[in-house]
Length: 373
Image 1 (cartoon, rainbow, N blue to C red):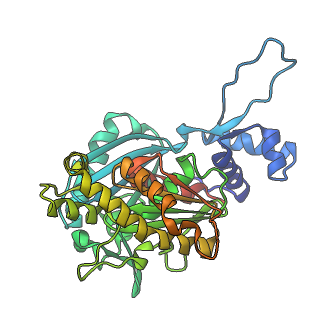
Image 2: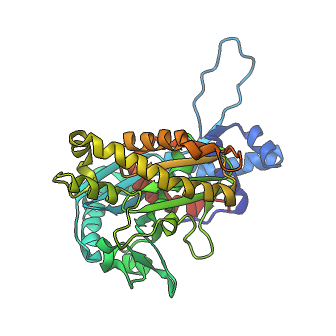
Image 3: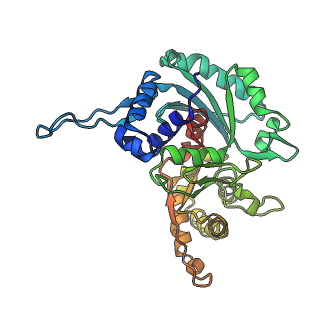
């Protein structure tokens, strides 16, 4: 695929942040001359990366109205994939960032070759069936639960139920097996990328933190309206502040499953947790109270170091749990009692749902191709 110039990337990134803008508005925002902006818009339009957004011309308007530009979905498409406890998800994301298709299938294997087989089958059959193979394919993004190996940053210390993925250069492995360019990212960071591109809460928010509750406690960091990964690609690894092991309870989805099982629920996956919660409301209530108390110091630590404008609570758990956590955190007695300090940031609940990880995975190739950072 044709490499973009720095100024082309800047224009695309600006449009992603504001959704649509006229050529004059973009030129003013990026300190470009009108003629230069006209030239760039022609280049990006010819590549099908931007398009003119349809506007209704009012009968009383004089002359031709300024036609805004927007990111074109015809610029290409990507495939994203991830594994959750008990199932896997695969998404198709177009160049505008919209997730067009997502499938969910039971999956419990620890063997990466089994994951490859499922993903390869999807690429070969599903994509051709919906006609996407006629479009420009930008690559695959795979979101993985686990941090980078301190001895080899290209390896990941994946969670126990993906232990077969350890001691592998995952990018090289999947590229060799699938024959396409592949991006590998932590699952919580992928969720943060989806919030940045497609959520309503992070528009021009500057610096924000996304907490993702799934198999563990993960996080993603947004600084200056762009994804921040850190020196060793582990920025936002909130699980370090809530370590597992030796009977320690954590504010995670897996921990919630364990509490339900202790109460008598026959449940093994977050995929079917709603029915169990309906049967054991006391477990839900007690878990929210305890998890909120555990999450609060993690949130305050993020506030102390990053001074975010937003903290987003997301996860592979039902929305009502996330809402309950927000409300409980906000009503905790000690919320405003740290030397009379009242947090400046807003806590929001993600509206993207549990699919934010696979959505963000699909955005990884697009972000790498177009981000001006």
